[in-house]
Image (cartoon, rainbow, N blue to C red; front, side, top):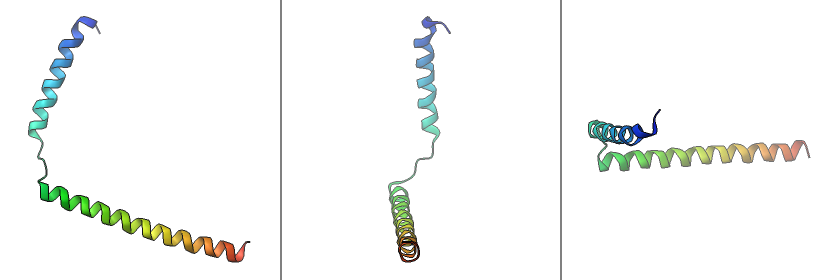
Amino acid sequence: MKIANLPQKLITYLKEVYLETKKVSWPTRQQTLNYTLIVIALSTAVAIFLGTVDFIFTTLLNKFVF
């Protein structure tokens, strides 16, 4: 790869990226909000589940092992 071609290749690449981003079907503001709330709810549910399982196993280990 020649150094002289690097600026032209970079410009070509950035132009292609720009053209491809125009083809993307971007979500609406409402869709983005809904998906964000779903992720927060699922993350909270998984955290509560794992915290509960951890608490149960810790309690059982402390009761029977130590």
